Image 1 (cartoon, one colour):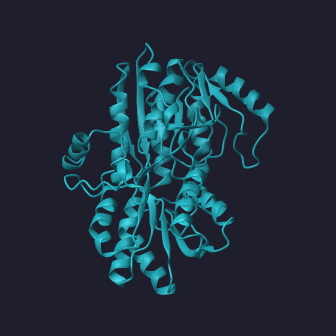
Image 2: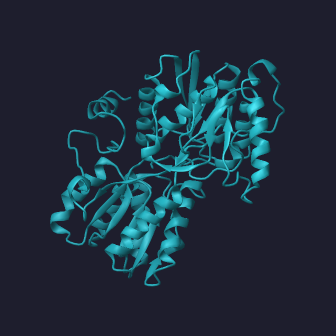
Image 3: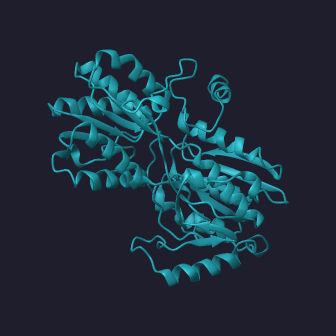
Length: 399
């Protein structure tokens, strides 16, 4: 994942104006879901319990795999739907995600308009963009809520105005599905952390000091991944997580290089690196090279540049191995499907929390061998569900 840094602020709590005509689309289902969730209890952190909810016929909160995902044709209804994609900032990862959303939207002829809104790293601007989209009468909002729980009051007001709000890729979000949002499709952060850590334990034979490079301070995605990493390391006393992780990089390549340079100066021995971003990994690898330190086993999110760096350095770095988990830009497709289903009154029983698979593993080889595509830009996400031609065009033409 390669997000840009944002500041966390508390949204304004001004009372929304009630608009009964649009709210009737969702309010009945919201009441049903609130009762169902209250019967199940809560997780003690402001979120829903392990039980599931639904808005209209959309099932929420269940875990699953890529194999359980379905198609847009199954939720594309018979009435016009307008969509607003609200993003916290802009970078290559988000650019690919928006292209995936447009590609998925094109599969539903009843989606008549998709607009893009960039909050430019400002949480208050994101709130303004949400409110503006609601005021314009949009039917679906797909949003990456960088500020996490701080946005819940604003999302809830949008739902009360009859908009199907679907936050995505947040890792862990408080609130209640069916009340604060339709559903929050995302990756299984703890499972991802466990997969990275288990691979690293195997590479190091259960003994070694490792670091985990995360993103912005306190972001729920990196925190959930760190929790999974720590679960695995707790079973292997020979493994140590330096700095207790996640170590913040703001998902910025230049900053990641500086952070890793500092870690290399501080620690004479770093035996492995886990990073939740391929972009961050590329910067951190350059820090190793500049410091004259041998490259170590590395596990991260996938990006073209990272695989190309592996191809470049592996011949002279025997201990350098690479595994990557998909950078999951394609989860935005699931978010759109859930939003369209809710707005159209169509059923959608796809899982919400997806166990994301490994896409590369140099130790396994075969189909999992690291894939460097010299004809594509360094920051292209090869695990995207876009043809190579579309990826190339996206970066060549500026999106």
